[in-house]
Length: 375
Image (cartoon, rainbow, N blue to C red; front, side, top):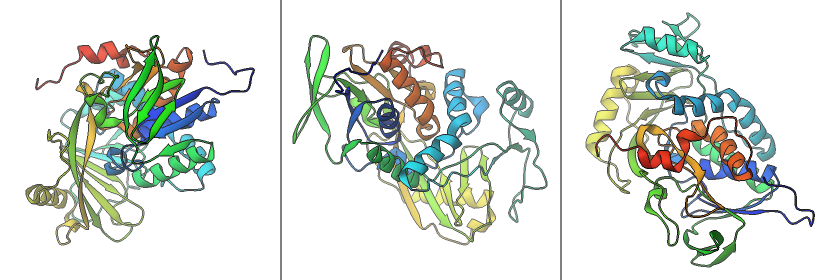
């Protein structure tokens, strides 16, 4: 267990990756008394953390295994307080909004509602009169999930970054790790193109790049990039005030009237390009769900690379090759949702504490045994 050093020297941690997973890990370690430096290959939060929609729930919670549910539900239960603390220390608004989600055309509503009841997640068939649906929307076999919240990803990243810096963390942007120095089963330092960072502990939180490995550090098993393309529209504020989900498509309203539509699942390697055919298809599907989008053009179209993992189960564990290297990656579609609970589990494992969640599903060995269904 990590104990305070009587000499006053703090344990140093170097985190590879400064997306939401890396920043969340940095924040909890700083609060537990570590000194923390983050190395980011690009801009802070510039990959999947920026590109995603910010829904703080699995899209259809009942459609995933218990390993996903356990981590997501623990995060969801404390998310409002977690964000409030980050905002308090950063002075920035992450735009947390408990706007609810309406899932349409749910194929098996009874088992879905039973799952929600068993897991303490508020849900009802249909939707209350207090939910104002936009003109033209046909609510087909809906399940209303009033507790589902959202954050605005880029603003959460900015708040997290400021909170990490406020707590004494150091962030090195455009500074990828190139390798490690090791001795006696431990990594002693992380190498970069501009210098060497000594480290008592190392955390690998490099998202989609975790599956590529690093000189002297084996890759995390079965992690691969999965591209997602999204569109952004601008409507008047209040036209849409809840998240809509139907058959793989989601619409996410922001308070200022922006609406996100997404997202694709594409096995395209590390290619983040977009294409016109997908833009047209996403626009048509979004307009079929929300007719107000039919007559306006998207104001932005982008793609991000998710850290894909079989069954959407992340890897949060000690690296098998080194005593002082840990991983927190592979959250696939729900890195923002799972961030608080993942960071808590990671920090507990690093310190030898008994974690609140069963760590078994997130172990390295479990990740080795899971395979992609298309393999």
